Structure formats: C-alpha cells, structure tokens
Image (cartoon, rainbow, N blue to C red):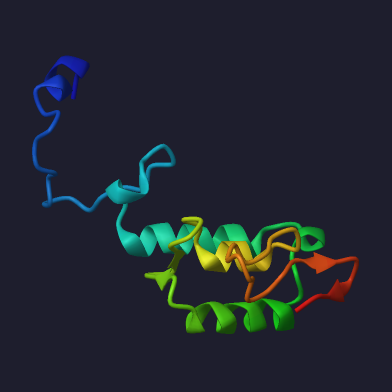
Length: 111
C-alpha cells in the first residue's frame, strides 16, 4: 500500500480480518495486551543480573504490591510504572510516602 493510500485510512477502524503485527514503535494502546505483556516479561528476563534483585526479594516486593490499594491492573497509580518492572530493579523503591518496600542497598535488603 502506498503512502497516499495509507493517508486515506488514518483514523479508520483497524482491519480485524488480519492479525495485528507487533510493532516496536507502537504505543501500548495499539498493541494487543498479550503481546505487550509478553514483551515486558521478556525484557525483565533479559535484564543484566547485576541490576536485578534476587527472586526471593522480587516475589516479596510483588506480594506487598498486590496488597496495596494503589495497584491497578499491574500498574502503580502513584508513579505509573508496571510494578513487575519496578520491583525487579535493585535501584528502585516503592513510591509511597511511607514505602512498602525500599531499594536494595549493597547486598543488604532493607524492608
């Protein structure tokens, strides 16, 4: 399809007869949720191990996030992050004024 033909389709409803392809430059609202979340989990899995907390700390953080009233569909309503991505990083902490969990400092876990 030429650029001129595409211009006529801007704003048109998506063609549902063909499966949507994953586009690395698409916005999340344009992606199918399963593809987006698969990509998010792949990203987490491929992060450098030096940047990530160990699996025990990660699961503890996620358990605390699941108890929080600010969790909404996997996102923190305070900072807007996906909690699974925020919780895996050593440098990150809970964004609440009184955090539910803090960042890992020099191999010592501070809770």
